[in-house]
Amino acid sequence: MPGAHHLQGREYSVAQRKKKTKKSKPRYSAKTADKHELYQLSVQDPESEIQFVTRVFQKLNGKKPMSIREDFCGTAFLCGEWIKSHKDRTASGIDFDQATLDWGTEHNLKAIDEPGSRIKLYSQDVRKKVPGKFDVGVGMNFSYWTFRNRPDMLAYFKCSRSTIKPGGIFVLDAYGGYESIQPMEEPRRITGGATYVWDQDSFNPIDNSVVNHIHFEFRDGTKMRKAFTYEWRFWSLLEIQELLAEAGFKKSTVYWEDADDDGEGTGVFRPRKKVENEAAWVAYIVAEN
Ligand SMILES: C[S@@+](CC[C@H](N)C(=O)[O-])C[C@H]1O[C@@H](n2cnc3c(N)ncnc32)[C@H](O)[C@@H]1O
Image (cartoon, rainbow, N blue to C red; front, side, top):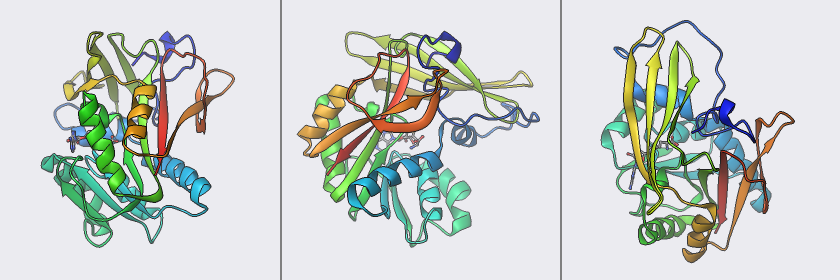
């Protein structure tokens, strides 16, 4: 994603979107750092996501959501924070990478005695149903862009809808903007002397395929290149909304982030039908079942 200094519109992008961290003592080095820990520190912000889905669900249903299905859950960070946020909340996390689920169990869930009675983890493809029906389904950090054609995306959305309760919501994020398909590296300092680098490596305008990497660099001069690599299709909001409708969701709405007077994202997302064409943006799509 483009660095804030490149942006002509809002000073905001995928790399800039999450926590703003203060400078701290060097703690990390490529020799000792754990890529999952750094990933969680750099790009995840479950608290904001929980606040967002709670606010939207509550507005539509007049009550708080209690159950969530986290697709592409990785380390199940969100599942853990979800059940901590209310004593009656439950979560199911799905990811086909057992090693990442194991890391999440060890570092995020063991201390709260889960997975167990309130969190279930499923090591499988997100297009395969899991037991139960949920108030909310989520697919965050653009993970669903792994599906690169309409039939695969439709199969995912249909499967998702089949386990969301009537009145429930399915929440996805998306990014875009005219700088979002340009090859570039965007660094952002995180904590403990580490820098997160979002690397937009390539974009093919024939099939919209993109390759993005996440690298980490450290103040001791060491680097962790290609800690994560994503081969995705770059989807437009309209294409996603059309497929959600095809999958049977009765309505979908784009939530766009408010900007302050300096063009900085405020972290508040509101339903919008028309917005300015910005250099780089991140939005939520909420589909209603
Ligand atoms: C970008 S990470 C997302 C982690 C976390 N949910 C977040 O919001 O940052 C993508 C995860 O999706 C998983 N994944 C990719 N394709 C999948 C599929 N078809 N079914 C299940 N998991 C999948 C990968 O194993 C990886 O852990």
